[in-house]
Image (cartoon, rainbow, N blue to C red):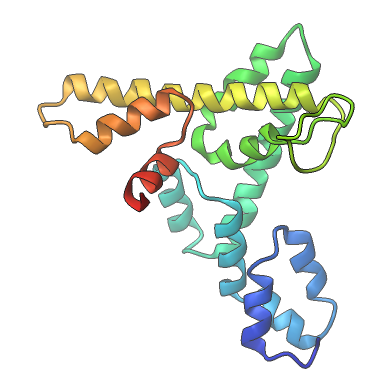
Length: 200
């Protein structure tokens, strides 16, 4: 594999789903190290892992990191770890779970992708139906439930904010915006709704 050209390696590395694999590639050879350290490689990893974001915060991150895809990825990964720690508290702490739930909601669309992943965790075989895919994990049903509740809460909070702006704005609301917010209230993300509307 070390005889592959650099551009082929970059294309292969762009499809890796985790930074640990990319970091491991730096130890294989100088060519692998070069390919795994390029911004194009990290851009592919970032875009394959993160489709959703809080747009304003994303712009701030890009300015702060001067559009370094590696630094953007590492910051988003840090946000994911924080979100998973909060989700873990919600799942395991029955008494004080709302103190963990509140900051998780406030992370908004920055944690949509990781919550969606957790919401799709495979149910253990004894409880599974044929619709679940992925890897089985302990408390999978509880993780599924809470991750989906947070996704719904985030999308509904977004919808309510959008409707509030419609009431205070003199602009005529576009059909696309109205349709998008109604779909978001039902638990969909605005990015997916927009993508669906313009690709259908």
